[in-house]
Amino acid sequence: MTWQDRLQETIKLESPDGDIFEVEWSDNDRSIERKLGIFDPPGVDGTKVQDLGSKGALYPITLYFSGPDNDINAAKFIRATSQRGTWSVLHPVIGQLTLYLSTISEAIAPVESGNITEISTEWIEHTAEGADKSLAELKSDTGSQIDELNESAFDQFIDNVKQTTSKAIVALKTVVNKATTITTFALNALYSSDATLSSQIDSILRGVDNSLAADVIDLTVLAGQVQNLVQLPVLSTDDSSSRLTAYSNLVTGALDISISGDSEEQKNIVSTQELFIVSALGALGQIAVTSSLTTRPQALGLIKAINTQFEAVTNGLDAVQETFDGVDIDLQYFSQSQSYSDTSMVIATGVAYLLSVSFDLLIEKVILISVPTSPLILSIQEYGENDIDANFDLFIASNVLKNTEILLLPAGRTVVVYV
Image 1 (tube, rainbow, N blue to C red):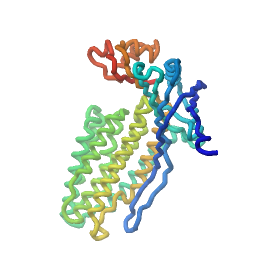
Image 2 (cartoon, rainbow, N blue to C red):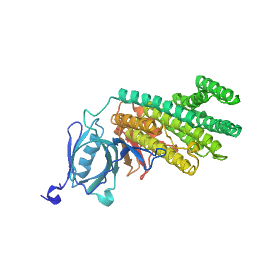
Image 3 (cartoon, rainbow, N blue to C red):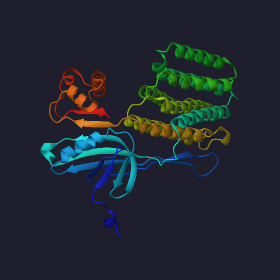
Image 4 (tube, rainbow, N blue to C red):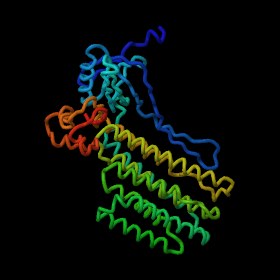
């Protein structure tokens, strides 16, 4: 039997409630990303790789409903996408799959292709039963990993910082002040409106000032103060967007701190820079498990953003490590020498939580308006006749409708609903 014999003519989909659809298909991509912890240990040639498994495969699939009843059949499929749970998909090439629907977009073009309705979908493969942990377990695992990360970052900072010369101590004090300013500027919007948090942050800042006033700094006290300063504001809200923006700004600002002076000064600067940044990565893990999310695309977008920040930090600190080539071994800087594996586990467990919670979130449905349409009528059609006012407010907010669009949507306008 050849591949031509194994290839099926159509793709078959069974909804969570048992509705069956058999539609045409031409091709699609499939992407699978490995979860790898990559670490370059000091004094050892080569790279150490920690295999953390793989993420669920992503399937962007375009479906083609054809024939005289293509519009009716496509409409039935659209309605079925509001069902919660896994879909059973018999793929023409890959075979049987268990998938969760993430997004759906319908192209309405009766003039150009009246005999075909094209629906673009994105799916994520569901992990086999028995391999799952409960959300509570994943959340607890992430919290435990953050504690371990803080401990290893704490030890890493104390082991790296040198206070054998006055210039090294001055460099340490200067960079702590710079990084503290960057942190408070980036995170101020999170905690400024919360009197309790603001008071706690002010107390930490006074503690940092007292630590820096000493001739020889107590690094154990300072490290704890920095970690609290960076991670406390994450408790201010459960909004993922505002927190992600704030911590991304912190990471970017901290990575931009210039590194100058002799080798001891430089190592103190980058070690402090690393402490602030790694603490921010711990906060990202907390964001993953404490964010209030509505839709699957929100969860998947947060996963992508967190992974992007982790990659940016790793690449940035690795680039700094290269500038220490040729320096005496005791003054060389080795990127995340003690914290990398813990950081990767924080990110991995946080992402696992987001993937698990995403399966119970709403699907994003994109609608292209073919003729001028009342947004109120469209909202009722999509969300039903219960809670009309609340659903209409959601429709307006999620599509940022303004002025006359609140009364009438023009042809060609794209809107989003959640099902």
